[in-house]
Length: 314
Image 1 (cartoon, rainbow, N blue to C red):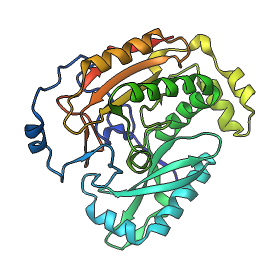
Image 2 (image 1 turned 120 degrees about the horizontal axis):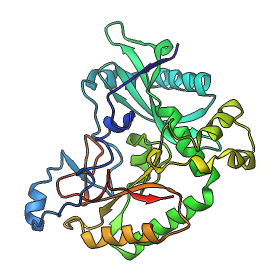
Image 3 (image 1 turned 60 degrees about the vertical axis):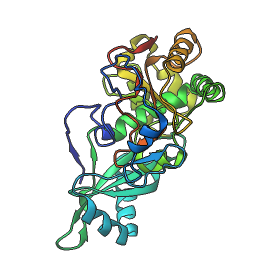
């Protein structure tokens, strides 16, 4: 039995539960707070914040999930089987389960796809805590989360050369400037954002008429050759509003504040490149720390460009 529950809009995805929408200051530039290192340390209690260099997802939580989370850990094999069976039946995909986080209705399971398409997403496995039972027949997903993750992964697959250029560009910035991305472990354990790297993720929704023919072809036949998938892409219908690439970096040094100079350099590089994927880009630069319970780097001193002021490539 397949259940899909609509949640209020913020990307219509797990993004809402993972620290909010991908913009922070309504797309406007904001000035970094100029606090000294000592004061900054006082503002970062260890039970709330962790270095981006070591954060793997520990401390992440969802409302009302403590009891269900404990139960899920004791019945890990059962929860994992329910997850894999559901995804195989509904989407014909094989997955690797990375993490389980209790929620008020059961447990949110973070998984990674296995196969030619690569993405991260979640399912919710309900738990009847009173009767100590995993409700394996009632597994569900957030509205369109897996579908949109597949669309984003298809972009990454059919435009692998363009995404390689983007990856190289962003990696070069970490070599030129004192900035870093997230750890691979945190991506796996608490960042269910579809096609994801340490520096960015993609968002493609069902209104994206350019990728939808590719999606339909893939869903009907997951073994469709890559050249046929690429041929199905309707580039003339591409609208960057429906394909977004939020980029996020962190300052490498613990006492460093986000730098507007670095953000401006990133914006310029994106605007001038003709070889990266088309889409609506946003950029945000955080200080060195992640809010553990939300897996979020967004704070008052985060700076950057975001909705509605996207960097448009088309």
